[in-house]
Amino acid sequence: MLPDGMSKELQLDHLRGVLVRLEETLIFGVIERAQFAVNPPVYARGGLGGALADESLLEFVLHEAERSHAKVRRYTSPDEYPFFDDLPAPILPVLPYADNPLHPHRINVNARLLALYVRDMVPFICAPGDDANYGSCAVIDVHLLQALSKRIHYGMFIAESKYRESTARFDAMIRAGDETALMTAITVPAVEAKLFERVARKAATYGSELANAGEGGVDPAKVRAIYERWIIPFSKQVEVAYLLRRLDAAN
Amino acid sequence: MLPDGMSKELQLDHLRGVLVRLEETLIFGVIERAQFAVNPPVYARGGLGGALADESLLEFVLHEAERSHAKVRRYTSPDEYPFFDDLPAPILPVLPYADNPLHPHRINVNARLLALYVRDMVPFICAPGDDANYGSCAVIDVHLLQALSKRIHYGMFIAESKYRESTARFDAMIRAGDETALMTAITVPAVEAKLFERVARKAATYGSELANAGEGGVDPAKVRAIYERWIIPFSKQVEVAYLLRRLDAAN
Image 1: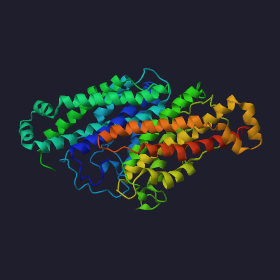
Image 2: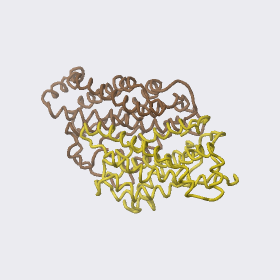
Image 3: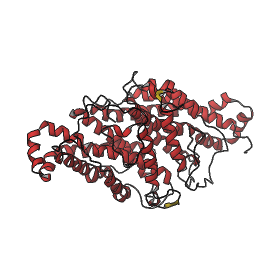
Image 4: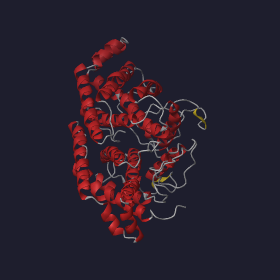
Protein backbone atom coordinates (compact mmCIF):
# COMPACT_ATOMS: atom_id res chain seq x y z
CA MET A 1 0.00 0.00 0.00
CA LEU A 2 1.12 3.53 -0.56
CA PRO A 3 2.63 5.63 2.16
CA ASP A 4 -0.35 7.43 3.61
CA GLY A 5 1.08 10.87 2.95
CA MET A 6 1.44 10.05 -0.77
CA SER A 7 3.28 13.30 -1.33
CA LYS A 8 5.67 11.61 -3.76
CA GLU A 9 3.35 9.05 -5.29
CA LEU A 10 3.81 10.17 -8.87
CA GLN A 11 7.52 10.80 -8.87
CA LEU A 12 8.93 8.33 -11.34
CA ASP A 13 11.70 7.22 -9.01
CA HIS A 14 9.13 6.37 -6.35
CA LEU A 15 6.96 4.49 -8.86
CA ARG A 16 10.00 2.61 -10.07
CA GLY A 17 10.89 1.69 -6.49
CA VAL A 18 7.42 0.31 -5.82
CA LEU A 19 7.47 -1.75 -9.02
CA VAL A 20 10.95 -3.10 -8.31
CA ARG A 21 9.83 -4.13 -4.82
CA LEU A 22 6.82 -5.88 -6.33
CA GLU A 23 9.19 -7.79 -8.64
CA GLU A 24 10.71 -9.52 -5.63
CA THR A 25 7.29 -10.45 -4.30
CA LEU A 26 6.19 -11.75 -7.71
CA ILE A 27 9.37 -13.71 -8.39
CA PHE A 28 9.20 -15.35 -4.98
CA GLY A 29 5.52 -16.08 -5.42
CA VAL A 30 6.28 -17.85 -8.69
CA ILE A 31 9.15 -19.81 -7.11
CA GLU A 32 6.90 -20.82 -4.20
CA ARG A 33 4.03 -21.91 -6.43
CA ALA A 34 6.38 -23.88 -8.71
CA GLN A 35 7.17 -26.24 -5.82
CA PHE A 36 3.78 -27.84 -6.33
CA ALA A 37 1.88 -29.37 -9.24
CA VAL A 38 -1.01 -27.63 -10.99
CA ASN A 39 -3.52 -29.33 -8.67
CA PRO A 40 -6.72 -28.80 -10.68
CA PRO A 41 -9.08 -29.43 -7.71
CA VAL A 42 -7.92 -26.09 -6.21
CA TYR A 43 -9.56 -24.24 -9.11
CA ALA A 44 -12.70 -26.26 -9.81
CA ARG A 45 -16.00 -25.30 -8.26
CA GLY A 46 -17.08 -28.36 -6.38
CA GLY A 47 -13.55 -29.73 -6.85
CA LEU A 48 -13.36 -30.49 -3.14
CA GLY A 49 -16.88 -31.65 -2.49
CA GLY A 50 -19.79 -29.60 -1.24
CA ALA A 51 -18.13 -27.88 1.75
CA LEU A 52 -17.27 -24.70 -0.14
CA ALA A 53 -20.74 -24.10 -1.60
CA ASP A 54 -20.31 -22.53 -5.01
CA GLU A 55 -16.68 -21.42 -4.77
CA SER A 56 -13.47 -23.13 -5.74
CA LEU A 57 -10.92 -23.58 -2.97
CA LEU A 58 -8.89 -20.68 -4.38
CA GLU A 59 -11.96 -18.43 -4.51
CA PHE A 60 -12.87 -19.41 -0.96
CA VAL A 61 -9.43 -18.61 0.48
CA LEU A 62 -9.12 -15.40 -1.56
CA HIS A 63 -12.60 -14.28 -0.49
CA GLU A 64 -11.80 -14.91 3.18
CA ALA A 65 -8.52 -12.99 2.91
CA GLU A 66 -10.27 -10.06 1.23
CA ARG A 67 -13.03 -9.95 3.83
CA SER A 68 -10.40 -9.76 6.55
CA HIS A 69 -8.25 -7.18 4.75
CA ALA A 70 -11.32 -5.06 3.89
CA LYS A 71 -12.03 -4.77 7.62
CA VAL A 72 -8.60 -3.21 8.11
CA ARG A 73 -9.28 -0.87 5.17
CA ARG A 74 -6.91 -2.38 2.58
CA TYR A 75 -9.20 -1.48 -0.31
CA THR A 76 -9.60 2.15 0.64
CA SER A 77 -6.01 2.66 -0.57
CA PRO A 78 -5.89 3.90 -4.19
CA ASP A 79 -3.37 1.19 -5.14
CA GLU A 80 -5.35 -1.81 -3.85
CA TYR A 81 -8.18 -3.45 -5.79
CA PRO A 82 -10.27 -6.39 -4.56
CA PHE A 83 -11.36 -9.47 -6.50
CA PHE A 84 -14.74 -9.56 -4.77
CA ASP A 85 -17.35 -6.83 -4.57
CA ASP A 86 -19.31 -7.98 -1.51
CA LEU A 87 -16.72 -7.18 1.14
CA PRO A 88 -17.46 -5.86 4.64
CA ALA A 89 -16.91 -2.21 5.55
CA PRO A 90 -13.69 -1.20 7.32
CA ILE A 91 -13.76 -1.41 11.09
CA LEU A 92 -10.88 1.05 11.29
CA PRO A 93 -11.53 4.69 10.54
CA VAL A 94 -10.88 5.26 6.83
CA LEU A 95 -7.84 7.42 6.15
CA PRO A 96 -8.35 10.44 3.95
CA TYR A 97 -6.36 9.89 0.75
CA ALA A 98 -6.70 13.58 0.09
CA ASP A 99 -3.95 13.60 -2.48
CA ASN A 100 -4.94 10.49 -4.42
CA PRO A 101 -3.34 11.44 -7.74
CA LEU A 102 -5.61 9.31 -9.93
CA HIS A 103 -8.47 10.72 -11.91
CA PRO A 104 -11.73 9.11 -10.70
CA HIS A 105 -12.14 5.78 -12.50
CA ARG A 106 -13.92 2.44 -12.25
CA ILE A 107 -11.17 0.19 -13.52
CA ASN A 108 -10.84 -3.22 -11.89
CA VAL A 109 -9.40 -5.98 -14.07
CA ASN A 110 -9.22 -8.64 -11.37
CA ALA A 111 -11.92 -10.88 -12.88
CA ARG A 112 -9.85 -11.16 -16.06
CA LEU A 113 -6.65 -11.55 -14.04
CA LEU A 114 -8.09 -14.42 -12.01
CA ALA A 115 -9.29 -16.23 -15.15
CA LEU A 116 -5.92 -15.71 -16.86
CA TYR A 117 -4.02 -16.87 -13.79
CA VAL A 118 -5.95 -20.11 -13.47
CA ARG A 119 -6.15 -20.91 -17.17
CA ASP A 120 -2.69 -19.86 -18.41
CA MET A 121 -0.26 -18.91 -15.66
CA VAL A 122 -0.60 -21.84 -13.25
CA PRO A 123 -0.09 -24.44 -15.99
CA PHE A 124 2.89 -22.42 -17.26
CA ILE A 125 4.50 -22.19 -13.80
CA CYS A 126 3.76 -25.67 -12.45
CA ALA A 127 4.25 -29.29 -13.40
CA PRO A 128 1.03 -30.94 -14.51
CA GLY A 129 -0.76 -33.25 -12.12
CA ASP A 130 -2.04 -33.46 -8.59
CA ASP A 131 0.15 -33.75 -5.48
CA ALA A 132 -2.71 -33.07 -3.01
CA ASN A 133 -1.11 -29.91 -1.51
CA TYR A 134 -4.30 -27.96 -2.09
CA GLY A 135 -4.21 -25.71 0.96
CA SER A 136 -0.58 -24.68 0.44
CA CYS A 137 -1.25 -23.87 -3.20
CA ALA A 138 -4.34 -21.80 -2.46
CA VAL A 139 -2.50 -19.74 0.17
CA ILE A 140 0.42 -19.08 -2.21
CA ASP A 141 -2.00 -18.29 -5.05
CA VAL A 142 -3.71 -15.64 -2.91
CA HIS A 143 -0.40 -13.96 -2.11
CA LEU A 144 0.67 -14.06 -5.77
CA LEU A 145 -2.68 -12.84 -7.11
CA GLN A 146 -2.69 -9.90 -4.71
CA ALA A 147 0.78 -8.91 -5.91
CA LEU A 148 -0.17 -9.39 -9.59
CA SER A 149 -3.29 -7.28 -9.11
CA LYS A 150 -1.33 -4.50 -7.46
CA ARG A 151 1.34 -4.58 -10.16
CA ILE A 152 -1.15 -4.49 -13.01
CA HIS A 153 -3.35 -1.77 -11.52
CA TYR A 154 -0.21 0.26 -10.88
CA GLY A 155 -0.42 0.94 -14.60
CA MET A 156 -2.81 3.74 -13.69
CA PHE A 157 -0.18 5.55 -11.63
CA ILE A 158 2.34 5.13 -14.43
CA ALA A 159 -0.21 6.42 -16.94
CA GLU A 160 -1.10 9.42 -14.79
CA SER A 161 2.56 10.28 -14.41
CA LYS A 162 3.11 10.09 -18.19
CA TYR A 163 -0.06 12.07 -18.79
CA ARG A 164 1.07 14.92 -16.56
CA GLU A 165 4.42 15.02 -18.35
CA SER A 166 2.85 15.38 -21.84
CA THR A 167 -0.70 16.47 -21.24
CA ALA A 168 -1.39 18.20 -24.55
CA ARG A 169 -0.03 15.30 -26.58
CA PHE A 170 -2.12 12.75 -24.68
CA ASP A 171 -5.25 14.93 -24.74
CA ALA A 172 -5.29 14.82 -28.54
CA MET A 173 -5.05 11.01 -28.61
CA ILE A 174 -7.69 10.68 -25.89
CA ARG A 175 -10.13 13.00 -27.69
CA ALA A 176 -9.61 10.96 -30.87
CA GLY A 177 -10.21 7.75 -28.90
CA ASP A 178 -7.04 6.45 -30.54
CA GLU A 179 -6.12 3.37 -28.51
CA THR A 180 -3.32 2.37 -30.88
CA ALA A 181 -1.64 5.76 -30.60
CA LEU A 182 -1.97 5.67 -26.80
CA MET A 183 -0.43 2.19 -26.67
CA THR A 184 2.45 3.37 -28.85
CA ALA A 185 2.92 6.52 -26.77
CA ILE A 186 3.22 4.61 -23.47
CA THR A 187 5.51 1.93 -24.88
CA VAL A 188 9.26 2.38 -24.47
CA PRO A 189 10.86 -0.80 -25.83
CA ALA A 190 14.29 -0.05 -24.32
CA VAL A 191 12.75 0.26 -20.83
CA GLU A 192 10.83 -2.96 -21.28
CA ALA A 193 13.93 -4.79 -22.48
CA LYS A 194 15.81 -3.63 -19.37
CA LEU A 195 12.98 -4.77 -17.14
CA PHE A 196 12.87 -8.23 -18.72
CA GLU A 197 16.64 -8.55 -18.30
CA ARG A 198 16.42 -7.45 -14.67
CA VAL A 199 13.69 -9.90 -13.65
CA ALA A 200 15.49 -12.76 -15.41
CA ARG A 201 18.71 -11.84 -13.58
CA LYS A 202 16.93 -11.68 -10.24
CA ALA A 203 15.18 -14.99 -10.83
CA ALA A 204 18.58 -16.52 -11.64
CA THR A 205 20.12 -15.05 -8.48
CA TYR A 206 17.33 -16.11 -6.16
CA GLY A 207 16.87 -19.43 -7.91
CA SER A 208 20.56 -20.28 -7.55
CA GLU A 209 20.37 -19.92 -3.77
CA LEU A 210 17.54 -22.44 -3.78
CA ALA A 211 19.23 -24.69 -6.34
CA ASN A 212 22.29 -24.82 -4.07
CA ALA A 213 20.00 -26.30 -1.47
CA GLY A 214 18.50 -28.78 -3.90
CA GLU A 215 15.20 -26.90 -3.87
CA GLY A 216 15.03 -26.19 -7.57
CA GLY A 217 13.87 -22.64 -7.82
CA VAL A 218 12.42 -21.80 -11.22
CA ASP A 219 13.75 -21.30 -14.75
CA PRO A 220 14.70 -17.59 -15.12
CA ALA A 221 13.41 -17.69 -18.71
CA LYS A 222 9.98 -18.57 -17.32
CA VAL A 223 9.95 -15.59 -14.99
CA ARG A 224 10.96 -13.38 -17.89
CA ALA A 225 8.19 -14.91 -20.02
CA ILE A 226 5.60 -14.24 -17.32
CA TYR A 227 6.50 -10.57 -17.48
CA GLU A 228 6.65 -10.52 -21.29
CA ARG A 229 3.46 -12.42 -21.97
CA TRP A 230 1.19 -11.34 -19.17
CA ILE A 231 2.28 -8.77 -16.61
CA ILE A 232 3.55 -6.00 -18.89
CA PRO A 233 0.92 -6.34 -21.64
CA PHE A 234 -1.85 -6.43 -19.04
CA SER A 235 -0.42 -3.44 -17.18
CA LYS A 236 -0.23 -1.50 -20.45
CA GLN A 237 -3.85 -2.34 -21.25
CA VAL A 238 -4.74 -0.82 -17.87
CA GLU A 239 -2.68 2.27 -18.73
CA VAL A 240 -4.56 2.72 -21.99
CA ALA A 241 -7.98 2.05 -20.45
CA TYR A 242 -7.24 4.62 -17.76
CA LEU A 243 -6.03 7.23 -20.24
CA LEU A 244 -9.07 6.77 -22.48
CA ARG A 245 -11.30 7.99 -19.61
CA ARG A 246 -8.84 10.58 -18.34
CA LEU A 247 -10.89 13.50 -19.67
CA ASP A 248 -14.28 12.21 -18.49
CA ALA A 249 -16.01 14.43 -15.96
CA ALA A 250 -15.48 13.19 -12.42
CA ASN A 251 -18.72 11.87 -11.01
CA MET B 1 3.53 -27.24 4.47
CA LEU B 2 5.16 -30.60 3.99
CA PRO B 3 4.64 -32.67 0.89
CA ASP B 4 1.74 -34.88 1.81
CA GLY B 5 3.65 -38.09 1.19
CA MET B 6 6.33 -37.04 3.69
CA SER B 7 8.44 -40.00 2.70
CA LYS B 8 11.60 -37.89 2.81
CA GLU B 9 10.71 -35.51 5.60
CA LEU B 10 13.62 -36.43 7.82
CA GLN B 11 16.33 -36.62 5.23
CA LEU B 12 18.75 -33.88 6.12
CA ASP B 13 18.99 -32.58 2.56
CA HIS B 14 15.23 -32.16 2.47
CA LEU B 15 15.20 -30.42 5.86
CA ARG B 16 17.97 -28.15 4.69
CA GLY B 17 16.02 -27.30 1.55
CA VAL B 18 12.93 -26.36 3.54
CA LEU B 19 14.95 -24.17 5.89
CA VAL B 20 16.77 -22.44 3.03
CA ARG B 21 13.46 -21.71 1.34
CA LEU B 22 12.15 -20.26 4.59
CA GLU B 23 15.21 -17.99 4.70
CA GLU B 24 14.02 -16.23 1.55
CA THR B 25 10.56 -15.77 3.01
CA LEU B 26 11.97 -14.46 6.29
CA ILE B 27 14.48 -12.09 4.68
CA PHE B 28 11.81 -10.64 2.41
CA GLY B 29 9.40 -10.33 5.29
CA VAL B 30 12.01 -8.34 7.22
CA ILE B 31 12.74 -6.13 4.19
CA GLU B 32 9.02 -5.53 3.69
CA ARG B 33 8.39 -4.68 7.33
CA ALA B 34 11.41 -2.34 7.45
CA GLN B 35 9.70 -0.03 4.94
CA PHE B 36 7.43 1.18 7.71
CA ALA B 37 7.91 2.60 11.19
CA VAL B 38 7.27 0.64 14.38
CA ASN B 39 3.67 1.91 14.51
CA PRO B 40 2.85 1.11 18.14
CA PRO B 41 -0.96 1.31 17.67
CA VAL B 42 -0.77 -1.94 15.63
CA TYR B 43 0.27 -3.81 18.77
CA ALA B 44 -1.72 -2.15 21.54
CA ARG B 45 -5.03 -3.58 22.66
CA GLY B 46 -7.46 -0.74 22.18
CA GLY B 47 -4.77 1.05 20.17
CA LEU B 48 -7.29 1.67 17.40
CA GLY B 49 -10.38 2.36 19.44
CA GLY B 50 -13.09 -0.06 20.43
CA ALA B 51 -13.75 -1.70 17.05
CA LEU B 52 -11.48 -4.67 17.67
CA ALA B 53 -12.87 -5.60 21.09
CA ASP B 54 -10.01 -6.96 23.17
CA GLU B 55 -7.47 -7.66 20.42
CA SER B 56 -4.71 -5.53 18.99
CA LEU B 57 -4.87 -4.92 15.24
CA LEU B 58 -2.11 -7.49 14.72
CA GLU B 59 -3.95 -10.08 16.83
CA PHE B 60 -7.16 -9.38 14.93
CA VAL B 61 -5.62 -9.84 11.48
CA LEU B 62 -3.61 -12.89 12.60
CA HIS B 63 -6.69 -14.45 14.18
CA GLU B 64 -8.74 -13.91 11.00
CA ALA B 65 -5.98 -15.42 8.84
CA GLU B 66 -5.74 -18.45 11.12
CA ARG B 67 -9.51 -19.01 11.14
CA SER B 68 -9.47 -19.02 7.36
CA HIS B 69 -6.40 -21.25 7.06
CA ALA B 70 -7.74 -23.65 9.70
CA LYS B 71 -10.79 -24.21 7.50
CA VAL B 72 -8.49 -25.38 4.69
CA ARG B 73 -6.69 -27.65 7.18
CA ARG B 74 -3.39 -25.76 7.48
CA TYR B 75 -2.93 -26.77 11.11
CA THR B 76 -3.44 -30.46 10.53
CA SER B 77 0.01 -30.50 8.92
CA PRO B 78 2.74 -31.53 11.40
CA ASP B 79 4.88 -28.51 10.46
CA GLU B 80 2.23 -25.83 11.03
CA TYR B 81 1.36 -24.44 14.47
CA PRO B 82 -1.32 -21.81 15.14
CA PHE B 83 -1.10 -18.80 17.44
CA PHE B 84 -4.75 -19.17 18.53
CA ASP B 85 -6.42 -22.21 20.08
CA ASP B 86 -10.06 -21.43 19.26
CA LEU B 87 -9.95 -22.05 15.51
CA PRO B 88 -12.74 -23.62 13.44
CA ALA B 89 -12.55 -27.22 12.24
CA PRO B 90 -11.36 -27.92 8.70
CA ILE B 91 -14.05 -27.91 6.04
CA LEU B 92 -11.84 -30.02 3.78
CA PRO B 93 -11.36 -33.68 4.61
CA VAL B 94 -8.27 -34.00 6.82
CA LEU B 95 -5.38 -35.76 5.12
CA PRO B 96 -3.89 -38.70 6.93
CA TYR B 97 -0.31 -37.80 7.89
CA ALA B 98 0.33 -41.45 8.45
CA ASP B 99 4.07 -41.06 8.44
CA ASN B 100 4.34 -37.97 10.63
CA PRO B 101 7.87 -38.56 11.88
CA LEU B 102 7.54 -36.60 15.13
CA HIS B 103 7.03 -38.22 18.48
CA PRO B 104 3.68 -37.05 19.92
CA HIS B 105 4.23 -33.71 21.65
CA ARG B 106 2.39 -30.61 22.84
CA ILE B 107 4.98 -28.01 21.95
CA ASN B 108 3.70 -24.68 20.68
CA VAL B 109 5.90 -21.66 21.41
CA ASN B 110 3.86 -19.13 19.45
CA ALA B 111 2.71 -17.16 22.48
CA ARG B 112 6.36 -16.51 23.36
CA LEU B 113 7.21 -15.83 19.72
CA LEU B 114 4.46 -13.24 19.39
CA ALA B 115 5.54 -11.44 22.56
CA LEU B 116 9.19 -11.48 21.45
CA TYR B 117 8.30 -10.27 17.97
CA VAL B 118 6.32 -7.28 19.22
CA ARG B 119 8.65 -6.34 22.06
CA ASP B 120 12.09 -6.92 20.52
CA MET B 121 12.04 -7.71 16.82
CA VAL B 122 9.78 -4.97 15.44
CA PRO B 123 11.74 -2.18 17.20
CA PHE B 124 14.97 -3.79 15.95
CA ILE B 125 13.77 -3.99 12.34
CA CYS B 126 11.90 -0.69 12.03
CA ALA B 127 12.50 2.99 12.57
CA PRO B 128 10.77 4.33 15.67
CA GLY B 129 7.57 6.29 15.29
CA ASP B 130 4.19 6.17 13.62
CA ASP B 131 3.58 6.57 9.87
CA ALA B 132 -0.09 5.46 10.04
CA ASN B 133 0.40 2.43 7.70
CA TYR B 134 -1.25 0.14 10.24
CA GLY B 135 -3.03 -2.21 7.86
CA SER B 136 0.04 -2.79 5.68
CA CYS B 137 2.16 -3.49 8.75
CA ALA B 138 -0.32 -5.95 10.25
CA VAL B 139 -0.57 -7.89 6.97
CA ILE B 140 3.22 -8.11 6.65
CA ASP B 141 3.55 -9.03 10.33
CA VAL B 142 1.16 -11.96 9.85
CA HIS B 143 3.17 -13.29 6.91
CA LEU B 144 6.43 -12.89 8.82
CA LEU B 145 5.11 -14.42 12.05
CA GLN B 146 3.78 -17.45 10.19
CA ALA B 147 7.21 -17.98 8.60
CA LEU B 148 9.01 -17.44 11.93
CA SER B 149 6.70 -19.91 13.65
CA LYS B 150 7.28 -22.52 10.97
CA ARG B 151 11.04 -22.01 11.08
CA ILE B 152 11.24 -22.24 14.85
CA HIS B 153 8.96 -25.26 15.18
CA TYR B 154 11.00 -26.95 12.48
CA GLY B 155 13.50 -27.48 15.26
CA MET B 156 11.48 -30.57 16.14
CA PHE B 157 12.14 -32.16 12.75
CA ILE B 158 15.82 -31.31 13.05
CA ALA B 159 15.89 -32.76 16.56
CA GLU B 160 14.12 -35.95 15.50
CA SER B 161 16.57 -36.40 12.66
CA LYS B 162 19.54 -35.96 15.00
CA TYR B 163 17.93 -38.28 17.57
CA ARG B 164 17.53 -41.06 15.04
CA GLU B 165 21.17 -40.72 14.02
CA SER B 166 22.49 -41.07 17.58
CA THR B 167 19.67 -42.58 19.58
CA ALA B 168 21.66 -44.21 22.38
CA ARG B 169 23.70 -41.08 23.01
CA PHE B 170 20.60 -38.88 23.20
CA ASP B 171 18.67 -41.40 25.32
CA ALA B 172 21.25 -41.10 28.08
CA MET B 173 21.02 -37.30 28.13
CA ILE B 174 17.21 -37.39 28.01
CA ARG B 175 17.01 -39.89 30.91
CA ALA B 176 19.31 -37.65 32.93
CA GLY B 177 17.16 -34.64 32.03
CA ASP B 178 20.41 -32.90 31.11
CA GLU B 179 19.31 -29.84 29.14
CA THR B 180 22.81 -28.42 28.96
CA ALA B 181 24.19 -31.61 27.44
CA LEU B 182 21.36 -31.72 24.93
CA MET B 183 21.95 -28.11 23.93
CA THR B 184 25.65 -28.85 23.44
CA ALA B 185 24.90 -32.03 21.48
CA ILE B 186 22.62 -30.26 18.99
CA THR B 187 24.93 -27.27 18.53
CA VAL B 188 27.36 -27.32 15.62
CA PRO B 189 29.07 -23.91 15.63
CA ALA B 190 30.55 -24.33 12.14
CA VAL B 191 27.10 -24.99 10.67
CA GLU B 192 25.66 -21.99 12.47
CA ALA B 193 28.50 -19.76 11.27
CA LYS B 194 27.82 -20.84 7.67
CA LEU B 195 24.12 -20.15 8.07
CA PHE B 196 24.75 -16.65 9.46
CA GLU B 197 27.10 -15.92 6.56
CA ARG B 198 24.57 -17.19 4.05
CA VAL B 199 21.63 -15.14 5.30
CA ALA B 200 23.80 -12.00 5.45
CA ARG B 201 24.94 -12.64 1.87
CA LYS B 202 21.38 -13.16 0.67
CA ALA B 203 20.17 -10.05 2.45
CA ALA B 204 22.98 -8.10 0.77
CA THR B 205 22.06 -9.53 -2.66
CA TYR B 206 18.34 -8.91 -2.35
CA GLY B 207 18.85 -5.59 -0.61
CA SER B 208 21.16 -4.35 -3.38
CA GLU B 209 18.45 -4.88 -6.00
CA LEU B 210 16.16 -2.71 -3.92
CA ALA B 211 18.88 -0.18 -3.13
CA ASN B 212 19.49 0.20 -6.89
CA ALA B 213 15.87 1.27 -7.12
CA GLY B 214 16.24 3.70 -4.21
CA GLU B 215 14.06 1.46 -2.04
CA GLY B 216 16.56 0.90 0.72
CA GLY B 217 16.29 -2.75 1.55
CA VAL B 218 17.69 -3.60 4.96
CA ASP B 219 21.13 -3.77 6.57
CA PRO B 220 22.48 -7.32 6.01
CA ALA B 221 24.03 -7.19 9.49
CA LYS B 222 20.53 -6.78 10.89
CA VAL B 223 19.23 -9.86 9.10
CA ARG B 224 22.21 -11.78 10.41
CA ALA B 225 21.53 -10.48 13.92
CA ILE B 226 17.90 -11.58 13.74
CA TYR B 227 19.08 -15.12 13.06
CA GLU B 228 21.82 -14.96 15.70
CA ARG B 229 19.80 -13.41 18.49
CA TRP B 230 16.36 -14.87 18.00
CA ILE B 231 15.67 -17.41 15.28
CA ILE B 232 18.47 -19.91 15.90
CA PRO B 233 18.46 -19.75 19.73
CA PHE B 234 14.68 -20.11 19.78
CA SER B 235 14.76 -22.99 17.32
CA LYS B 236 17.38 -24.75 19.46
CA GLN B 237 15.25 -24.28 22.57
CA VAL B 238 12.46 -26.05 20.69
CA GLU B 239 14.88 -28.84 19.75
CA VAL B 240 15.85 -29.34 23.39
CA ALA B 241 12.25 -29.12 24.65
CA TYR B 242 11.23 -31.75 22.11
CA LEU B 243 14.11 -34.08 22.95
CA LEU B 244 13.45 -33.83 26.69
CA ARG B 245 10.02 -35.43 26.11
CA ARG B 246 11.18 -37.79 23.36
CA LEU B 247 10.99 -40.85 25.61
CA ASP B 248 7.60 -40.05 27.17
CA ALA B 249 4.87 -42.54 26.47
CA ALA B 250 2.67 -41.43 23.61
CA ASN B 251 -0.77 -40.52 24.89
